[in-house]
Image (cartoon, rainbow, N blue to C red; front, side, top):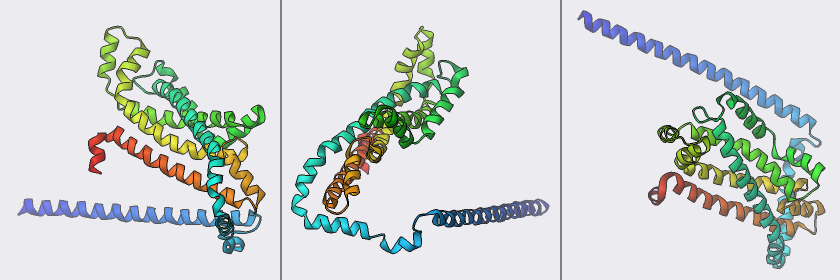
Length: 293
């Protein structure tokens, strides 16, 4: 009986401690929620005061521009196929910018990620340097880099490609370094024991293990880079974004062209998203995993 009462008392103490921790967690959650709501409210009020027109004053007109674009596109529906063909080269330019930036950025990211991974780095003391380098490259927005490069090199696809590739190195380098940390060190130790160089150990011992994850992340980044390439066109970096800016700046009379560009962008992003999702799934789960979904 004494043992039973001691066990019951212990269980009661555990239950009371658990309830106390749960109440404390609830209080912390409530405080954080209040802080979040206060910050969001104050931030919205400040932004609304600084805005040129005011959010609430223009809220009722939020559907005016889409209605004008769709209305004019409907009136000139017969011209839509011609517009699609006309802007197709600009779309291909946007896709080429994203593909080149992803390829170049991905290759550089592989090297930097290997140099920034513990247990794999060629120079272990420089691991923090390479990690901070990736942080900086990831933190600077593509549009800032593109604006600087356009000022130096002039408008066109080259500044956009360099800007997107620069950001891609930082983003993919971070993801690749996390993948590298899960690689087995046994093949690397075996290659090292027979006198393989660092490059040979990485190419033969690490890359085969992590290549599917590398390709999966690269495909995901390719989707992001297509959208980034289209956005950079608004600052004169070429591609279909530049054509969209011109069509929207012209105003009424060119809204049918803007609608055609929107359709091309939407269809392209949807198609690439579906294809990349499919191939990412095959890379990470295999063909059998794809059939089960």
